[in-house]
Image (cartoon, rainbow, N blue to C red; front, side):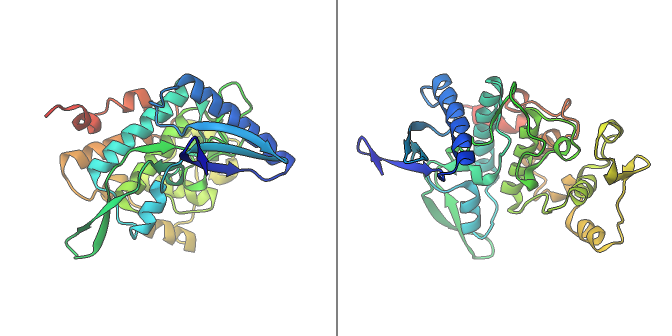
Length: 303
């Protein structure tokens, strides 16, 4: 479709009342974003217009390209180079910090919701002589504000796609902006390794994976949780000898064991991941602090 000669993307919502109401909420968020960022400097997708077509809510957007997940998949899940991760990470932190500054939590951050503006690529060869597609321009936009929640609004009990869900959500402790930071940590790990950090569909298994990667869940969180069924005497009720237990043991190892290199920038990235994947939401790094992390320093160095 074209608007004023330029191609656009059109999101068409099913003609059902519940979807129509959800679309109105998303439009409200997108209008607030446009109003606060008229020059599109904060890496959030731009809504151009919206209309109701016989009960179908239709939202017009700037036309973007492949998602960071789709590009990874098309590239046989070969990880992104660390300099590209740095550029994407900085933009994601910038975009989500803009939301937080405007009293919004995205609640559904994942590689599928981060789109390249242009997914043209070059072919490069790696040591294994395997074709590796290298994206030419890592400029991205954050999309899908259908679940975005203002600070004053009702906060749903369950949010986020499973693999990117923060521990405070699983433990029903309430959530706010820090849950987005956790999701970003999971996303950056996936860009770095080419696979999901938490490949699970079960809450208790998810917590067991967290403990294998980041150590025990803090006592305060366990004691405050309404999900006591996952614990026994203040510890995760988990059988390491069960089939699930063996799966977690084989699949998960302490975070630093995933380093692909001992170069400084790799250690800096993992220091940032450590802070983003902090259990306690109150001590998890904020995005304003994250954007000043040493990992991002090369972006500000003038050659």
